[in-house]
Amino acid sequence: MMIYLSGGTDKIDREDLGKAVRSAFPEKGGTLMATIAEQWFQEGEAKGEAKGILIGKILLAQQIQRQETYSEAELKGKNIEELQIIFSDSVGRLSV
Image (cartoon, rainbow, N blue to C red):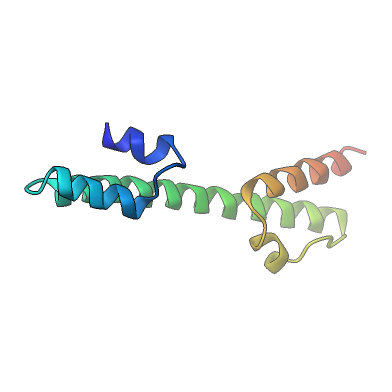
């Protein structure tokens, strides 16, 4: 239930959730928060890995096209949704 609450709403932030869990479960609250924190870490790691792969694909598409539209630094500053759009555009130009 705690994992669901931690990801299912934007009405409570992680710090407030941690305080509530430790208050409600003084003996086990730290363990529960460690489990939730591990899940957050794994989710962040997976997102970072997916973003890195997408950046690599965009850079490769740019090399094939012999056109650098975005630098690696510019791509790193974009969120995953923006990168997906850029990648789709890059792939679209490859097939033309």
